[in-house]
Amino acid sequence: MNLRRALLSLLPLLGACSDDSYAVVSVLASPDPINQVAQFRVHVGNGSAQDTLYYPSQPTAWLQLDDTNPVTFSVEFSSSRSGDASFEVEALDASGTSYGYGKSTGAIVKDTVVSVTVSVVKGAVRPQFEPDASAAGDGDTGVLSCDPYNPALACGVGATCGLLCSPDQPAVGMCYTAGADNPGAACNSNNDCVPGSQCFTFPGCSVRTCLKFCNHDDASCGEQGSYCNIPIPCGTAQFAACSRPCDPTGSATIGCAPGLSCFVYTGETTDCACAGLGTLGAACTQNSGCNGDGNCAGCQAGSSCVVPTGTTPDAGAAGGVCRAICNLGSPVCPAGMTCHAFDQSAGRVFGFCE
Image 1 (cartoon, rainbow, N blue to C red):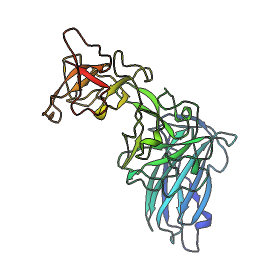
Image 2 (image 1 turned 30 degrees about the horizontal axis):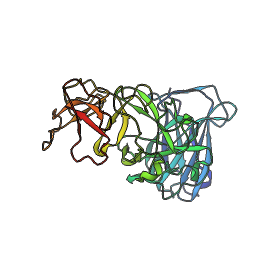
Image 3 (image 1 turned 180 degrees about the vertical axis):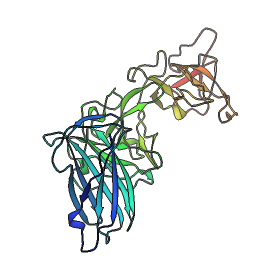
Image 4 (image 1 turned 45 degrees about the vertical axis):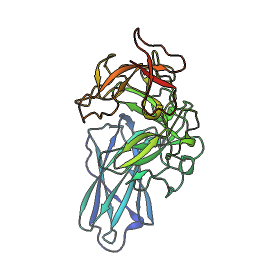
């Protein structure tokens, strides 16, 4: 619902001049709705000045937050204030306990009303400590509130740092109370995953698993057969997560969460993904499911998209063939086929049947 716009004076920032700069803050809940919100606690920062406001000033009748109908209010600035301002919003219940947290920024300009949208994520917690300036992936990360590669710096012991990603916007980091689920395990929310990991959704099959963040360092993955080679695009930034060691032969389910299958990739690394529909012998463009992408054909579990040596598939065209995966040490192939090593194979563990 939209509420009547209210003015919240940023008192420590006010000078003797007239207050003629405003930020209209629209609060949404994403991706999950939040019910029975009694009040917002709003942390506003502009340079070295910080203030904490409450909207409304006293807990009120319950508000409902979703991803389409924002609750709006205004923050008033002195005309002497300019530049970027941060807006951190906590959604509170009637007792003052936080349901979730969100953060955004906006540029304060004299005599101008700016619009700022803050997405509150259910279960997220405001960082306990100052952001670490080194917390960044590749590209435009802005200043993250916490470091997904080292969550304890801002979130404290027993917490993890998750990313909120919006198109064409810098990544937003926020803290969560961590759970006990290890990387690769099925999860329902970020609160299920151990520190240093986050619950990600595989869109092609709607499966959610914990993935461990890694700062382009294979050793940080901490498991044999796990490599820091999974790109995590987040808004205008790029992060990385660890692949999953698994068995791509046979049913290709060993080592993967229910609903995912194991596939073998360049360098004979393995990872879990959504299975495609391509049967053995079918034309393909990639191993796994295509997440709804057009002009894309993936292979079923237990197979791999094998491209003939010396050829390169055209973008969007099927340049490979789905072949059964085999173990070179103890090969099992369909009748009449033998197990071949992948071209330029280094590990010489897995191959394909032809």
